Amino acid sequence: MRGPTPEDTTAMEMFRAIAKHYGEGGWMMHAISVALVFTILLVLDRVIALYFQLWTSKEAFLKGLREHIYRGDLDRAISYCASQKRTPLVSVVKAGLINVPKGEADVQAAMDEATLRESPRIEKRTGYLAMLGNVATLLGLLGTIIGLISAFAAVATASASEKAAILSSSISEAMNCTAYGLLTAIPALVAYSVLQGRSQHMIDDINEASVSVLNLIIANREKMKMPASVGEEAAG
Image 1 (cartoon, rainbow, N blue to C red):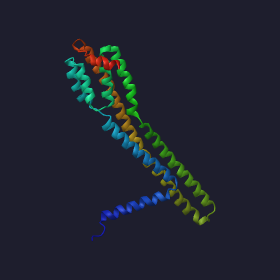
Image 2: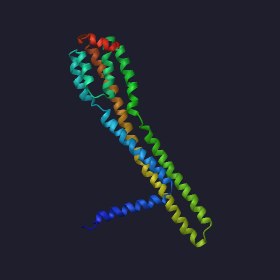
Image 3: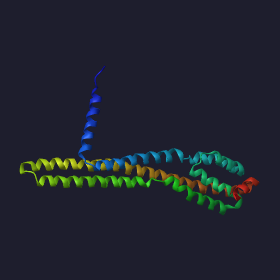
Image 4: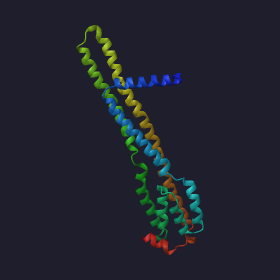
């Protein structure tokens, strides 16, 4: 049976050092760990939602939709939307198509209403990442302040020869809390910026697609077939 490799030894030493610093940081390290766990869960939730569940390629979707609108086949256009994954972009466009028999104003109003309804699905919970980043930073500072208070209290009762050593050691330990808070806060704030940008990009895609579809409908209005089923669906 082979012994530990140099890489294994290095990894073990690293984990021991991390555990040592964590233990020296005091009880506030546990509070920062809770913020870290929530940050990881939120990032995973939003990445899955924004990059997989709620995302539709605007170009690919509109390319397929244009073929039906150019032919004036409104029923096929609605069926095409219904066959796609239910994402905010698809839902907004479908809401507009269902209201085509009522006129352009109703199409615009329906898409605006659907956009207001779907936007919260895109932006949901992302803002909590910024809050968690700020909370982790403040918890780190609070832990450091508490550690410094304890350090100076210990120095007050120590002998003159021990004061410098005790103060140096205590300050070093207290700073572990600030470091851990920053290590939690920085990724949280970076993730917030990235995911917020993704959310805004998706909302911009919805607005652009809404205008594009409305213009297509207006340009091909005379060719549009208005089957009874569409009128019944719009009325319902």
